[in-house]
Image 1 (cartoon, rainbow, N blue to C red):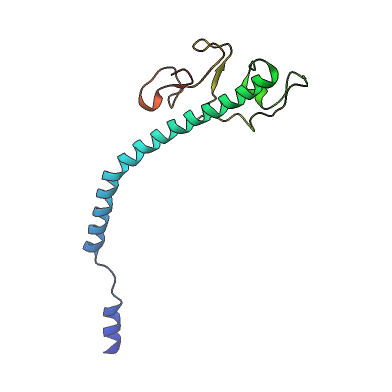
Image 2: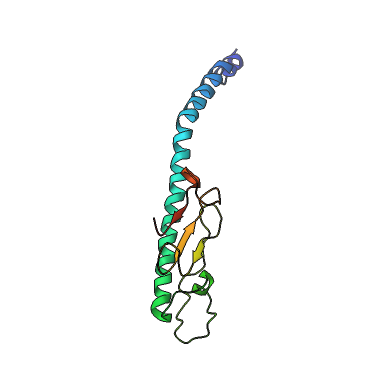
Length: 139
């Protein structure tokens, strides 16, 4: 008799209880998921804008030492001029944007006098909307 009572006390959840919990979790995921996804894409754009500002700071330091902006971003990490004025590395490494694409650096710039620095966004193509919109130092 005591064994029967112990077995009933160890009884788990019923199938209906589990289905109700799963339905509630699915509803929550459906409501919260899209909001979180939108916040993630905005965060990636913020990261790229911050990285552009960091690269700009390194470019300004390079210009102070060398008297001009580099031809390529790699000159911020490794000296290719063999001039004693080079006091780098000005940045540890050239980061990739949030979508693992290289930043586009043009010197002299087409939009700015000194240089243009940009990311093509998530689509990796010029232009675009939302996540695919370009992020640059001239806008």
